[in-house]
Image 1: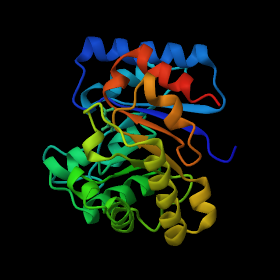
Image 2 (image 1 turned 90 degrees about the horizontal axis):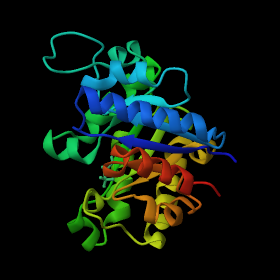
Image 3 (image 1 turned 30 degrees about the vertical axis):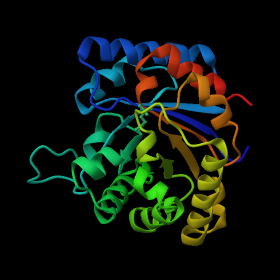
Length: 253
Ligand code: 13P
């Protein structure tokens, strides 16, 4: 298989020390037990839990990522965290451009691109999030919006190894609603085409495109079976070991 499945948990702003460590440990143990060679697992806890999560998952193949980074390496940026700092404490991945950051922190494609570039140059892998709002979907603009987001927020230094794209329809996040499987496949295939135009066919074929937005054990199998869906970026269901691992199990072909 050209692309290894990636099952990634975005914990968002959830988890205090005790339950966060327990969740990380629980997932790590199950990942170890599962012994999958065809699928990678990643957790992205909040910044405050990264160090302790790193210790909790030690000795397993579970990977660690953060939910955002600054584009500068260091300096006068109160409250920000650099990609270098994330790498320093053992992160392999960072999510950038999540719709909650695009909306709540007014992040532009340009800024997201700078963050992605900084993360890649530091040696981290990036998960760049894109996705349309409900109004954009209703206006038939889904593919145009996603294409513009790829154009604007995926840097030229991205390739099939260092970058993952997550397609997360904004209206599907935390709502229990999902697009039909036909819609998901159509958008993912279109994303791959745009990536091919921008970065070349070889990179597009290697690049993983995750689906995110109300993915759960009951709908994961049909979503993960789609040819251009290479894994999931999971919010709510990543906060329960059993649900997260059940989604992983559903990725088995
Ligand atoms: P939910 O799985 O809670 O819908 O969140 C998806 C998401 O935003 C992951 O980044």
